[in-house]
Amino acid sequence: MATFRLPTVLNEVIRAHNNQLIRPIKPKNGVNSFVFPCRKMVFNYCERSGSSKAMMEYLQKEALEFAKGNPQIEVIVQPRPSKHPLIRAFYTNDKQKTKTVRKCSIEEIPEVVKSLRDHSGHTLRRWNKYVLSDTPSVRGIFSPFHVHQEHKITDQKPQKQ
Amino acid sequence: MSLAKSLGLLGRRAATSAVLARGLRNQTSGFGTSMFGQQEAAEPSTSTFSALESRLNLKFKDSGLMEQVCTHRSYEQGRGVSNERLVWLGKRVLNLHVGEHLQKTYPNLPPETLQDVQHANFGLMGLAEVAKHFGMQPAMRWTPVVKEAPQVGLTKVLGKSVQALIGAVYQDQGDAAAKRFIAKHIVHSKPVDVENVMVIKNPKLMLRALCKRKELQYPVARILKETGRFTSSPVFIVGIFTGTRMVGMGYGSSIKMAEFRAAKDALLKHYAKEIKGIDIGEEEDGDFTFVPQENDGAKVGITGHA
Image (cartoon, rainbow over all chains, first blue to last red; front, side, top):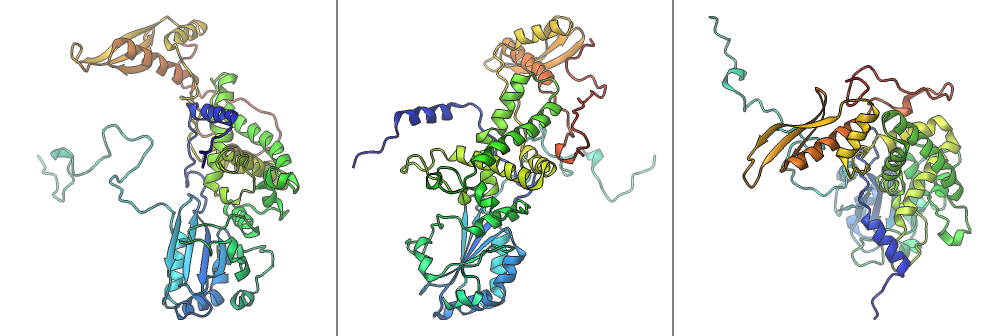
């Protein structure tokens, strides 16, 4: 199979595009405006299997309420025969999260739905810094434990001299 | 199939809620056929568009408007209604309001640089990032130029869709609403990058010319602090002065480089001077006369006073 090559004009366009020194800055969610991260949730169930029982009940009773209460989320209900029930959430940062709700009780499913809805979409990772900033302070953030002895806050009353 | 019917949502256009029930027959278009089920359905539906509207806190009077916004003219060879005309209108509305904001925020920038700043930050590339942030990419309806490379042209299409969105807001809800939308979601959602847009190749020369224009004294560089002069890693901190006032400060491993940075700093402090607190979305548009901002008397950077 021959390797695919883009036409020459497009090649040049892409090269010029990549050579641009200015990279656009991504908008930050939360700065002045907030865009809800969870954009779509897909509920999969199976008509016949027993593991989907609670899921079916949830879909019949509470799913519509959830969808109406969250107009910003596209809710899709799709049968998936002979498979365990699933809830799949899609986020605006092109990430997905899937949770199987096989054999879950009717009380557990709304909790799963809520946790997926409230997630930002970013992969869970350990943050070693407690503050992330575009303008970090040069000398570091203030810590009351690393001050001079005279400035330490204690319970003892200052001695009168 | 029975459950879907019992939900009573098959074939009905979702108006307030973005719910869609897909029957078994449609399963092949979704991810039922893929091995690991990780694919998303390729075609956006009415529920996608109404969800997008809600996510941006918009309520269009025309219900098909969002669909139009997301349809590029390459879709179905332009047979349906596309966002071309909305792009045309929206581009002008967007550029007007963004330009107004930049004009008020950066009083010392020459118009060529204002144009560059607007193009770099709020041109198609910047708007494409905004579109991805909104989650518009899965809602886009377009045909790539080259089928095997679907990413080619995506930036342009996404950028245009944001322009179309502004046009739609303007058309549907008026100028004030469009202005508020732009201020909220586009202008203030990220820091405006001015420093990297200004190409300053010879800062010392530029600074000398600027000082002459402003009738200030000839700029002189003086070392403020230094360390490690004859070692392998010296550091010089140089300040550039017009008379007795320092207008810029720079660092470097050589004196010349430090002077270079100091002159650049002085130029940026003058040209890229920012007036904070300007919010075009919160202004009441009584009449459309533009009143230029007055300096509040603080002598920042290079002014006519020594």
